Image (tube, rainbow, N blue to C red; front, side, top):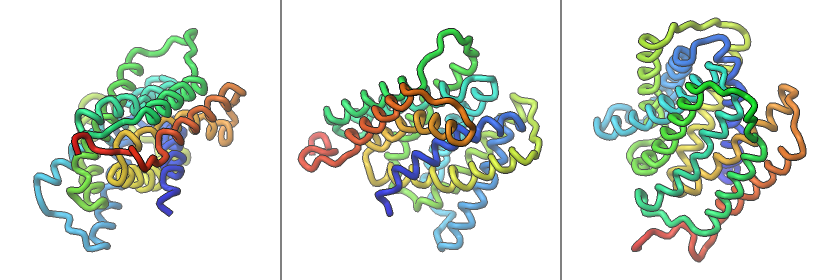
Length: 293
């Protein structure tokens, strides 16, 4: 079952970009995220109590989890939603934030003592080039500057969050950690909604369906899988999966909302897939050795 987790994560995480667009039409970005994580907090808290996990323990561990939640669910998702709400293309947003494997691989060595092998670097390069082929850059379009800034802030947050979570992944049970992460994100977005935006939510059918999908499939599903993968694999290896998110998002848009897809898109998808395979496959002789171990 766990072997299917990377594929399931990619599909669920990619679906978040598709469903974010209708959400930002019917709600201001930070109000929508506050709404989402209020339910996510209750869900994980209930699951923790149901499985007899200790919700109230070490303050230090709880604060670490809350920092992770602000990085992942607060700044990262806030940057993505804000960018899309300002008219920044979903595909370009996905491309920018999914450059995370490059930053993570560069930083994983000095910060986490991980060895990034030459095969992983080849896979990272193929994944990056494949993603560029799928999404491309339409230089004729005028992209809102605020969207570019928000997307790169989101990129920095998800990279920092991945490294931070790897550092503390053994500290709390997964459901308890997710409870504190969701709670901190809910509070973070509530503060932003009340201070920097004219918040609103229109409870349309498309909003309810989209936000429900993000609560159940993305927050409960994809993010839990991500935390598990970070805990059981290296940060650089796990982060490489993000290269498949933009091309899969494009493929899903083609299937579900009839967006066009070209032969270049297919070539890019294959390149990104092969790159992820190279970067994540096991190498018994040198795979993920620790420096100076």
